Length: 191
Image 1 (cartoon, rainbow, N blue to C red):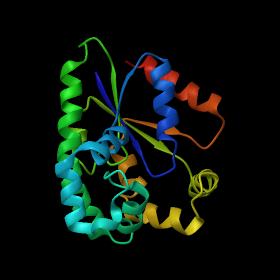
Image 2: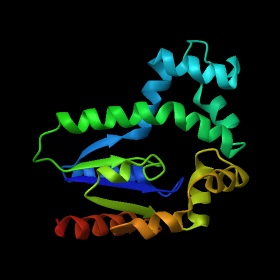
Image 3: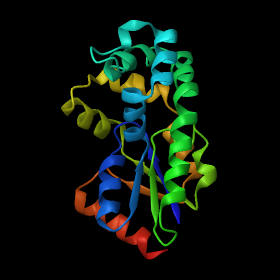
């Protein structure tokens, strides 16, 4: 069984994925795959540098994700260009991992841009994690983002309301961790 896990920036997908892992799910983390690509894939690094300049490089020659984010989150066209470079490689790696996993496992693909990348076509079910805007802002301020940065990034993504329409299950991640755990348990009982 392949389950997609998505939501908007700061809704708590990583926490939810961790809770599913504790229940026996095999997690494929698209962000983690992307981080490895930006560190090690020379072809991707060269394409990104050609598009956005050498200022996005770290001293080690990998992509400085913070510098790149500052550039691509300024306008949707640049974000789209970046996605055209990275998404095919991320998708290929996700498909590769799915092939290698035991068929009796249940797999969670944790991907913030799951729908945008077309990964929802691989899924048996889609879970969307939601949290209200003020909760998201409060959480991300603790991680060093300003209110304006959070709001800007949210505007750059596919609206949460659209993702919710496609969801088989919704996890409301506004409350306490125990509440989120109960929602996960209810979802798991349906499989």
